[in-house]
Image (cartoon, rainbow, N blue to C red; front, side, top):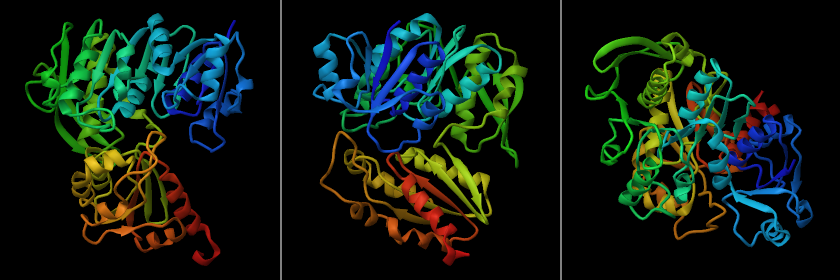
Length: 436
């Protein structure tokens, strides 16, 4: 038996994949930087060893899987090649691994992680399954019937997969450091759709998705009457959102999800459609209601009168959806957006749209732009965004206590970088003796 060594094991996809291999009885280890990431807790719980980067981690008999964030000149990648190890990039290995199961890829510009989590939850209630969620959660089972996984469009990595089924939530322009235009993104999704073997479940309300031509059947879901699966009679309750589902204009059943906002209804419809196609009974699909959510997607806690939410929203459409969810769930509270832009290229490309989506909050605080491993600096600063949002403020880590003035409010910390450090700094001010 080989040992699987993961270069960059704390990455969200990498962490999840390492857990799947471990749960499937494989020997797994990995390496990464010292910095603490929210993904490492699950690895530590499963006693998967994590080492600092070093050439000495690599042995000839290992199968080495490298995260996509690392270039070919990384010391461990160089060492693996030198020693002639079996070597894969993350998406290449995943493309091979999923061939042993009935695989369901979940892709789209927005909503991938939440939809993958929701589908995994429902199937896991009825079958032994394996799943890989983009929040760093992975679960393997030796007798898996299904393999549910998140498939990312960035750098067209999802073209490494040939899934049996695919859910496509939407198509939107994002990752401007790679994609040149919306047409380029549509082209990537078209190529992905060409690789699906049995059936595609797609959001029929999305104009760009309507442009995709497929060789396999497509089931459309959404709010408009032209969809195969349509949501009607939406009611918001204290417990969540209730809606009726019509299948080809015939009433099917009523479902409840513990979330708010139209985007969450659409995600649930995608799950209902694929489960229905696979012959799963409505009573089993209704287990949607007990879904506990995925990490960093509207993750909330209450402190006194305040509700503090951690969310991964890093695109204007996602910010709008998150603020909308907060308004629907807490109609009597003020909504305060605390946003950290992710990457200079995205901030520059969507500067005006970020300003418009954030302006839907009652108050806006901005944190410095988070560069990524791919780009350390850019030609603009957070002040460029602040200039477009009247009455917005810059939030400094050392002065997070300014947020205490929003007593009966929802504070949403949003971003794909390290926005959590601002949330932690704020929560620490609530614990300080001067605040007692």
